[in-house]
Image (tube, rainbow, N blue to C red; front, side, top):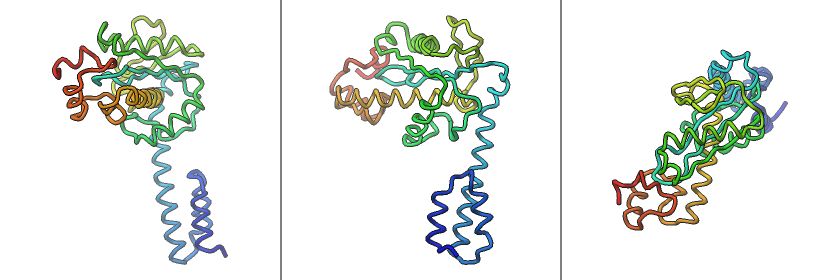
Length: 251
């Protein structure tokens, strides 16, 4: 008979998809320690099945366009900050895709975003980043800069998509079928994947900018108008990555 310690280690090494076999093997063991481990396994299994169901819903739009060969999801990060670029991503996921926990990047912890970024960039059929800096934003406005970055993302994909899913925007200069989905990063796995890649890319850029332009807290606030950032902006004045069209109320 396995010791409770051995069973505990076995549970730790059991993948979520294999929990059913673990539960069946040890559910008849009456030892209190094993009963607790089985209960823990059942809880994990329930959460896993719920995630499978959630991910099934996240592919609702992808299933609607099943006749399309390559669907690219697009999203942006950084329309609201006082400093730094707007960053977009276009990504084509494999179908089927076995990556779980894909969601609106704002709903994920930084650690989970990093984990998913690695999985998505490794398993995506293609992905591309578009970046428009603060100078472009000041010149043509944030909406147009966002669209321009998205167009760059699509054009740089190594695989040409035949369908685009975009979070709440339409790209007039791109002649590919498009579906604009309001709050798409919470409804489409393709858009959510793009939001994660774009978010991690921009966050890492802002962490590097923090080393170049210390004092504004860019590593922490990522250029958004936190109290710390606004205080530093008033005391230090703007740095080269601040958006002049965004900071008029503070300096």
